[in-house]
View 1 (cartoon, rainbow, N blue to C red):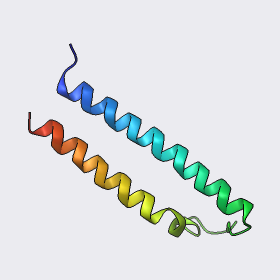
View 2: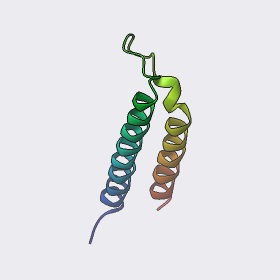
View 3: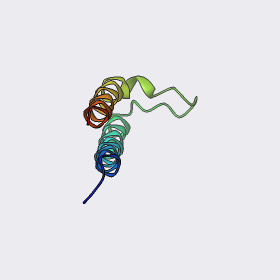
View 4: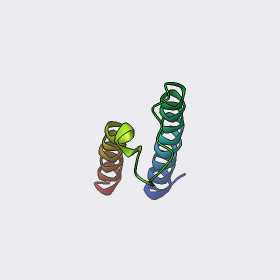
Length: 69
């Protein structure tokens, strides 16, 4: 039987794996359209803003779900 911490870690891992897949998909789409900037560390971060907010919201929900138990 898994502990709540193990369950939480599994859900968070799945969330972040899916985030990376979606981020890569968006990146490829932007590159295909010729919109990708090749300079500056944060030059392309605006393309991922809504995805990042969504993941942060889900992360908080997962943590809250397991901190109540």
